[in-house]
Image (cartoon, rainbow, N blue to C red; front, side, top):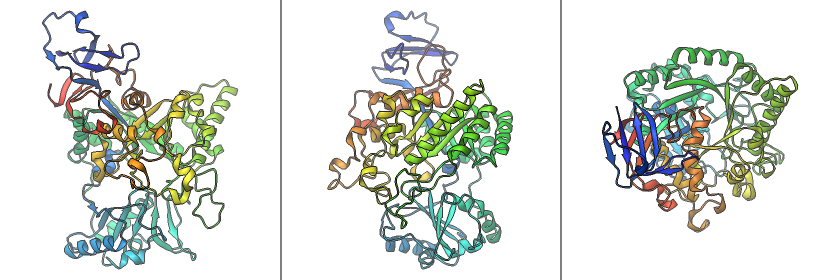
Length: 559
């Protein structure tokens, strides 16, 4: 069983045979890549003449969130505006039209990160729109949440409630220590079950195969054949993924990561990871990575930075960081001893340096003891990097993961008030790191159904290749062409292509099986309506996926 695809424009992501016009697939595996003139047709396989269409390896999304997207289908979309009165009016009118017996908990997304320029939102302000039930509004960065008094009350949050991770997972407080109604990161998830118990209701977000299947169908239809889930809460998602795989409806290679917060919870998290790996891993499903949030976000002003933020009253605030170099070094050594990879969220230049210092220290400790460094450390986002540190991922064997569709105006100027113009203008620079030899993987990091359409790798390529966001453009009167500074930070077509194929596979430790159109690898391939390397960069998102092959089987579109 197999097929021949010929008269095609093949980009293989294989340095030995970078381009070809014919690929032969037998029993789900690639058995020939090259020119049609060198292939002998013995007539035992069906032949598809693609009429010159473009064929690339199946795309890899190496940092995304199927669980969170699948759990968000019930959220209510806010109007896209920074007008607080308009936001409050929408919430008030929605609450009036949907009484508590119909919607006992109101969850709205998103308000733009630049909405509250003159001071953070408060519970009292949200109370003016809805006070008869708990209400949560999600900031566009996904790292802040604005809640009303009723939600804090039902979660039993008071001035005496300890923050799970001070400076990161925390309740913003006033001068008296009282929670203001602004939440950082996902702190509410530690307490929200109390709320659900009081209202006698839970949201429709169980991770069933049917609900999760919506996410994976979208990915398949857009050419994605491998997914790394960057935050797995428990094994509910794994049960759903395994069930989809059993039904032959998964059609991706799936890898997931469990979160740890520090040395205290690390041993238990490693034990749970190994248990999940033993119970759920298969040819298509794996669990061998831990996730760490090292700092917050630039837009929230709690990223860890080398020079003081511009917005803090003290004038000396360097943001917030979850672990120092010594503790992170110990964590990395423990993970290396257990053979567990580490995926680190970081956005500030101090967080980047701390992560690099910890990897360097851990490797040096092992070398001194004649040990072996075997794990893979991936630094995700890396939005602000001191130029003096750009060479370090290559030297230390660290992989870098960047969310391509953030490269334009997606977050607006939200970080500028905290970082200032100079630092804001040098965010999102990766060419220097790649130039020094670093491996760059690209991903979508979508966390909600609101933005699922932006998981299309071709849209991500367009935005990272132009620094222009077609949906959220920067003001062209301030930024000519709506290009996010600086224009020379756009990524080349080769980096975009490799980032969504072979480099993503490398990050997921799948490069021996997929990520390129190479003889001996599984036949994961995407047929495109136009030539990926020929269209202008600002048209990449308009390319259509005509067909998707997963292990040699057409799972979307047609040939």
